[in-house]
Amino acid sequence: MTETARQLIIFDCDGVLVDSEPISIEVLVDALSAAGMPIDSEMVHRRFLGRSLGAVISTARDEYGLDINEAFLSAMRASLYDRFRAELEPMAGISEAVRGLAQENFDWCVASSSQKERIELSLTVTGLIDCFPNIFSATMVERGKPAPDLFLFAARQMGYEPSRCIVIEDSPAGVEAAKAAGMTVFAFTGGGHAKGTHYHQALLALEPDQTFDAMADLLHLVAKTGDRDGNQP
Ligand SMILES: [Mg+2]
Image 1 (cartoon, protein in one colour):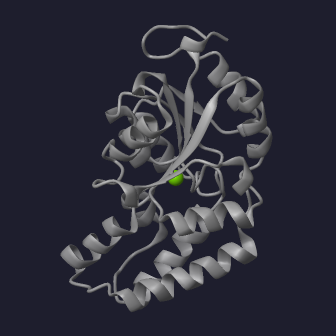
Image 2 (cartoon, helix red, strand yellow):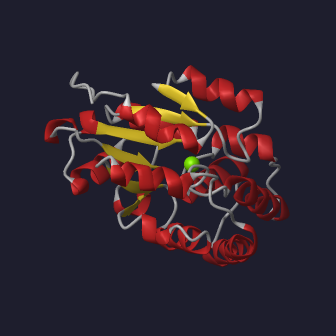
């Protein structure tokens, strides 16, 4: 592989590296229902998947008049972290996929809507932390996904032009963000939450460059993808 053809693989974390969405959707639904917001997992899928907690807080406030205070958030975070420590699993095949990327001279990093503390906890309890030395959180930029800010920031920090980045995302908000950043985007549909037809339709409507549901296929798929400047690998 020539130097000019090198690409950066930018991984979302939740629903891509770790199978966290079934757990976090349950925790969010329980906490917000207890606070009086009529919410179910279908609504979380539709409106909040891949977005930051800030987006959830604004909706609760603006549409339901709920004041989500710091005590509520830290209680919810504590129960989420307890469940992550007890139940969170890495996405099947992810460490092998990253090992393959390293062997083929790709660079990679993580760019997630979650807080850095949560990303690090997720990767630590699943034994993945050593595979991901470069982690970028939406708290490092002004606008979260679906704005392109976080992906552009991560690419800049890693020394890559957007045209040489491939984003791996499971959520519509993340696919939208990658497209807005001018990057190639692969939609990953292998997570425990990625079952419903509505979810697949929402992802496909955004026309990702590729859709796949097994991490074992990742290396082969990125290896055959040229960059957006027309250079073939
Ligand atoms: Mg995600």
